[in-house]
Length: 258
Image (cartoon, rainbow, N blue to C red; front, side, top):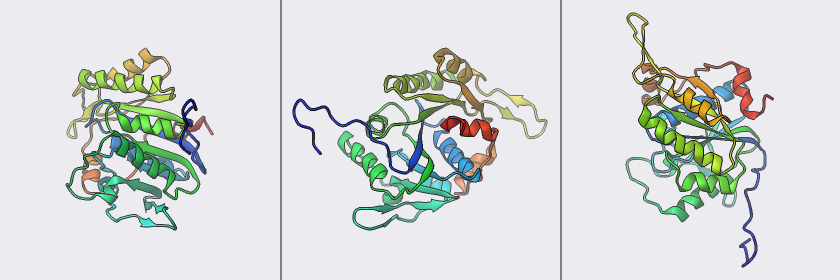
């Protein structure tokens, strides 16, 4: 219902049947945000949870490639969209609707509309978790998401490099200003283990994300993930195997330890 002059616009509304919505963001692209989103979603599904994965990275929708899914969603009833399924997940992505190398050049109102459609017109059913892969930065998509549904929390992904950390701080501050609880920070590509001698090499300055998390107080460093060829190879081959690097208790803490 449109708001009238002097009437407050409706606030974010819970998504029926979805217990927890976790946004995964980053200040900078290329830090492994989508890789983490897919890994987290598949890991939760392998633990027995019902999980949906919403690829909100409109400009670079890589979830279809990583999951090896390239079909188009089917319509389910009037103005309803049936999500695709892969690895126990319910998945929706602009990449299903706009495959190939054709770019999407949209302004803010169209971005807001696609977020609302993916949230409200997709038949998500009952979910324990919905993982939302946000685009890099602090733009329209994140704002539209927060204005549409209440988020349970957000995870920020960064590498240990100063350049990445500088932009990750902006992402953390964005969530704080929008009053979204920060679940924590993940340091990706934290180090590289030599396959010949098993010596750990700090490609960047290891520990930067953990130090940043401590600076913000309300967050914690969830994990440090090494630079490894196997996840990249899996993603490029359109085949993803979950690697659960944390204990189940830490993973389920995203929803308050249930």
